[in-house]
Amino acid sequence: MMRLEDTPAAQTVATPQWSDARIAVALDDGRFLLHDGRIAQQAPSCLVQPQAGDRALVVGCADGDSFIVHLLARTHDEAVLSVHGASALSLSQARIALNASDSVKVRALGELHLNAATGGMHLNSRNLFIGVTETLIEQTRHRIARAEHYLLTVRDLLRLHGKQTLLTAEKDVKVDADRISVG
Image 1 (cartoon, rainbow, N blue to C red):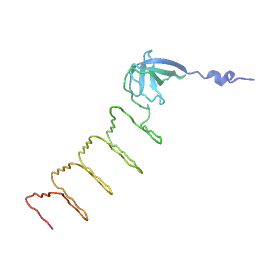
Image 2 (image 1 turned 180 degrees about the vertical axis):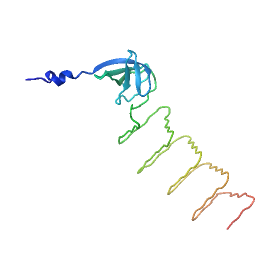
Image 3 (image 1 turned 90 degrees about the vertical axis):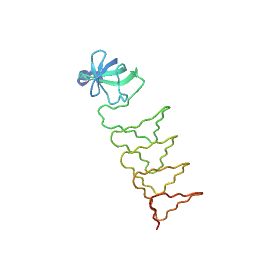
Image 4 (image 1 turned 90 degrees about the horizontal axis):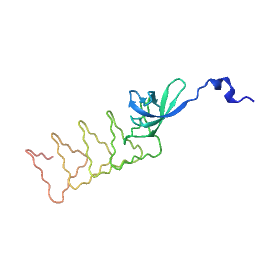
Protein backbone atom coordinates (compact mmCIF):
# COMPACT_ATOMS: atom_id res chain seq x y z
CA MET A 1 0.00 0.00 0.00
CA MET A 2 1.37 3.41 -1.01
CA ARG A 3 1.37 6.13 1.66
CA LEU A 4 0.55 9.77 0.91
CA GLU A 5 4.08 10.84 1.92
CA ASP A 6 5.53 8.54 -0.76
CA THR A 7 3.71 10.16 -3.71
CA PRO A 8 5.75 12.48 -5.97
CA ALA A 9 3.41 15.43 -5.30
CA ALA A 10 3.86 15.10 -1.52
CA GLN A 11 7.63 14.96 -1.85
CA THR A 12 7.84 18.28 -3.79
CA VAL A 13 5.68 20.29 -1.37
CA ALA A 14 7.81 22.12 1.20
CA THR A 15 6.67 22.18 4.79
CA PRO A 16 6.10 25.67 6.21
CA GLN A 17 8.74 26.71 8.75
CA TRP A 18 7.35 27.98 12.05
CA SER A 19 9.44 30.18 14.31
CA ASP A 20 9.13 32.89 16.90
CA ALA A 21 10.76 36.25 16.29
CA ARG A 22 10.92 39.74 17.74
CA ILE A 23 9.68 42.59 15.59
CA ALA A 24 12.51 45.09 15.15
CA VAL A 25 10.91 47.79 12.98
CA ALA A 26 7.44 48.43 11.59
CA LEU A 27 7.86 49.20 7.88
CA ASP A 28 5.13 50.35 5.50
CA ASP A 29 2.10 48.52 4.10
CA GLY A 30 1.82 45.88 6.85
CA ARG A 31 5.43 44.72 6.57
CA PHE A 32 7.85 44.31 9.47
CA LEU A 33 11.59 43.82 9.85
CA LEU A 34 12.26 40.94 12.23
CA HIS A 35 15.25 40.76 14.59
CA ASP A 36 16.83 38.05 12.42
CA GLY A 37 16.76 40.25 9.28
CA ARG A 38 13.71 38.70 7.60
CA ILE A 39 10.86 40.81 6.29
CA ALA A 40 7.42 39.49 7.27
CA GLN A 41 3.97 40.77 6.54
CA GLN A 42 0.98 40.75 8.84
CA ALA A 43 -1.33 37.87 7.98
CA PRO A 44 -5.04 38.77 7.83
CA SER A 45 -5.65 36.31 10.68
CA CYS A 46 -3.35 38.37 12.96
CA LEU A 47 -5.92 40.94 14.11
CA VAL A 48 -3.69 42.85 16.53
CA GLN A 49 -1.38 45.16 14.62
CA PRO A 50 2.23 44.22 15.45
CA GLN A 51 4.58 46.83 16.88
CA ALA A 52 8.33 46.99 17.35
CA GLY A 53 9.36 44.88 20.34
CA ASP A 54 6.49 42.38 20.06
CA ARG A 55 7.26 38.65 20.06
CA ALA A 56 5.45 36.97 17.18
CA LEU A 57 4.76 33.55 15.73
CA VAL A 58 6.06 33.63 12.13
CA VAL A 59 5.53 31.12 9.35
CA GLY A 60 8.00 30.95 6.46
CA CYS A 61 6.48 29.66 3.22
CA ALA A 62 8.15 27.73 0.43
CA ASP A 63 8.05 30.75 -1.90
CA GLY A 64 10.15 32.75 0.58
CA ASP A 65 7.32 34.85 2.00
CA SER A 66 7.08 35.15 5.76
CA PHE A 67 3.89 35.98 7.66
CA ILE A 68 3.23 37.10 11.21
CA VAL A 69 0.28 34.92 12.16
CA HIS A 70 0.03 35.57 15.89
CA LEU A 71 1.48 37.81 18.60
CA LEU A 72 2.91 35.88 21.53
CA ALA A 73 4.00 38.74 23.80
CA ARG A 74 3.49 42.49 23.80
CA THR A 75 5.80 45.25 25.00
CA HIS A 76 3.22 48.05 24.63
CA ASP A 77 0.11 48.71 26.69
CA GLU A 78 -2.02 49.72 23.68
CA ALA A 79 -3.34 47.37 21.00
CA VAL A 80 -4.75 48.31 17.60
CA LEU A 81 -7.07 45.91 15.78
CA SER A 82 -6.21 45.99 12.10
CA VAL A 83 -6.74 43.49 9.28
CA HIS A 84 -3.95 43.97 6.76
CA GLY A 85 -5.23 44.23 3.20
CA ALA A 86 -8.85 44.97 4.19
CA SER A 87 -10.43 48.36 3.56
CA ALA A 88 -13.29 47.80 6.02
CA LEU A 89 -13.82 45.94 9.29
CA SER A 90 -17.24 44.78 10.49
CA LEU A 91 -18.31 43.07 13.68
CA SER A 92 -21.34 40.86 13.20
CA GLN A 93 -23.04 39.32 16.21
CA ALA A 94 -26.47 39.34 17.85
CA ARG A 95 -25.10 41.42 20.76
CA ILE A 96 -21.88 43.41 21.01
CA ALA A 97 -20.69 45.25 24.11
CA LEU A 98 -17.85 47.77 24.33
CA ASN A 99 -16.77 48.20 27.94
CA ALA A 100 -14.14 50.56 29.24
CA SER A 101 -13.39 51.53 32.83
CA ASP A 102 -12.13 54.96 31.73
CA SER A 103 -13.35 56.19 28.34
CA VAL A 104 -14.54 55.20 24.86
CA LYS A 105 -13.81 57.35 21.80
CA VAL A 106 -15.44 56.91 18.40
CA ARG A 107 -13.90 59.01 15.64
CA ALA A 108 -14.43 59.34 11.92
CA LEU A 109 -12.89 61.82 9.51
CA GLY A 110 -15.93 61.45 7.27
CA GLU A 111 -19.37 60.36 8.41
CA LEU A 112 -20.51 58.60 11.58
CA HIS A 113 -23.84 56.76 11.68
CA LEU A 114 -25.63 55.38 14.74
CA ASN A 115 -28.79 53.48 13.82
CA ALA A 116 -31.30 51.63 15.96
CA ALA A 117 -33.88 50.93 13.26
CA THR A 118 -36.46 49.05 15.34
CA GLY A 119 -35.34 49.76 18.91
CA GLY A 120 -34.46 52.62 21.19
CA MET A 121 -31.28 54.58 21.60
CA HIS A 122 -30.28 55.52 25.12
CA LEU A 123 -27.73 58.19 26.01
CA ASN A 124 -27.04 58.51 29.72
CA SER A 125 -24.49 60.99 30.92
CA ARG A 126 -23.79 63.44 33.69
CA ASN A 127 -23.11 66.10 31.04
CA LEU A 128 -23.86 65.99 27.31
CA PHE A 129 -22.12 68.39 24.95
CA ILE A 130 -23.16 68.66 21.32
CA GLY A 131 -21.26 70.89 18.94
CA VAL A 132 -22.48 71.40 15.39
CA THR A 133 -20.70 73.91 13.17
CA GLU A 134 -23.33 74.18 10.43
CA THR A 135 -26.78 72.58 10.54
CA LEU A 136 -28.70 70.59 13.15
CA ILE A 137 -31.98 69.06 11.97
CA GLU A 138 -34.25 67.19 14.34
CA GLN A 139 -37.27 65.25 13.14
CA THR A 140 -39.51 63.43 15.56
CA ARG A 141 -43.12 62.55 16.13
CA HIS A 142 -43.09 63.45 19.84
CA ARG A 143 -40.50 65.39 21.81
CA ILE A 144 -40.66 65.71 25.57
CA ALA A 145 -38.00 67.67 27.40
CA ARG A 146 -37.80 68.23 31.15
CA ALA A 147 -35.34 70.62 32.70
CA GLU A 148 -34.91 72.62 35.87
CA HIS A 149 -33.62 75.53 33.81
CA TYR A 150 -33.82 75.85 30.03
CA LEU A 151 -31.99 78.72 28.38
CA LEU A 152 -32.18 79.30 24.65
CA THR A 153 -30.28 82.07 22.90
CA VAL A 154 -30.82 82.72 19.20
CA ARG A 155 -28.76 85.35 17.40
CA ASP A 156 -31.18 86.21 14.58
CA LEU A 157 -34.64 84.56 14.30
CA LEU A 158 -36.58 82.29 16.66
CA ARG A 159 -39.82 80.93 15.27
CA LEU A 160 -42.27 78.75 17.14
CA HIS A 161 -45.15 77.50 14.99
CA GLY A 162 -47.87 74.98 15.63
CA LYS A 163 -51.52 74.31 14.91
CA GLN A 164 -52.07 74.93 18.61
CA THR A 165 -49.42 76.64 20.72
CA LEU A 166 -49.61 76.96 24.50
CA LEU A 167 -47.41 79.08 26.70
CA THR A 168 -48.13 78.55 30.39
CA ALA A 169 -46.45 79.93 33.48
CA GLU A 170 -47.41 79.39 37.10
CA LYS A 171 -46.38 82.92 38.14
CA ASP A 172 -45.13 85.31 35.52
CA VAL A 173 -44.83 85.75 31.73
CA LYS A 174 -42.63 88.58 30.54
CA VAL A 175 -42.54 89.77 26.94
CA ASP A 176 -39.95 92.44 26.22
CA ALA A 177 -39.29 93.94 22.79
CA ASP A 178 -39.09 97.24 20.91
CA ARG A 179 -42.32 96.25 19.15
CA ILE A 180 -44.90 93.63 20.11
CA SER A 181 -47.53 92.50 17.59
CA VAL A 182 -50.45 90.29 18.64
CA GLY A 183 -53.01 88.87 16.25
